[in-house]
Length: 197
Image (cartoon, rainbow, N blue to C red; front, side, top):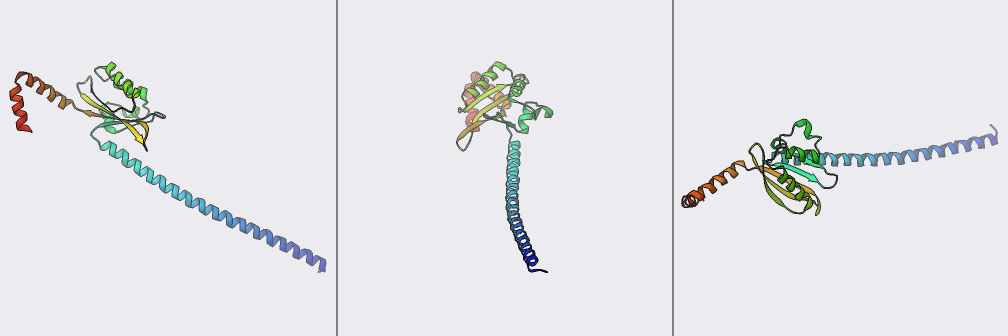
């Protein structure tokens, strides 16, 4: 082989060796980047799994409550409720998932004894979102619900409200009986209270 051809051959081998080395460095950098992205995705996946577990625990806690609970967000109007709320208001399972605020209000107003009063309560809640409220709501089926509204905050910022509904029918009936008995025989009621407490 001539010296010129040998020089050309060696030059070509050197260039190819340099190109191979550069490709290997790029491949190594890409593998490091891929490894870093994989670790980041694994960490994010773990965070999502933990967040889902926390959400599941929160929803199970809400469902364990004896009260019907309705949480409504101010921004985006997100609405969440527990199974007791669904049962209390007789909401069909197939309607619960697609219920919006207007449909819920219409459903509730159809079940309350005084729809105008219930609408006033609902409007007052919206007009004064930072105010805690407690009202009694009578339903057409004879039940009496205590409606307790609390503002909901996340890191000090108001994001919505949480309303709990408690069936106080028996307590309200007993209070009416006691009031009636007090008007007829106050001494006997006072005596009964003294021995009860």
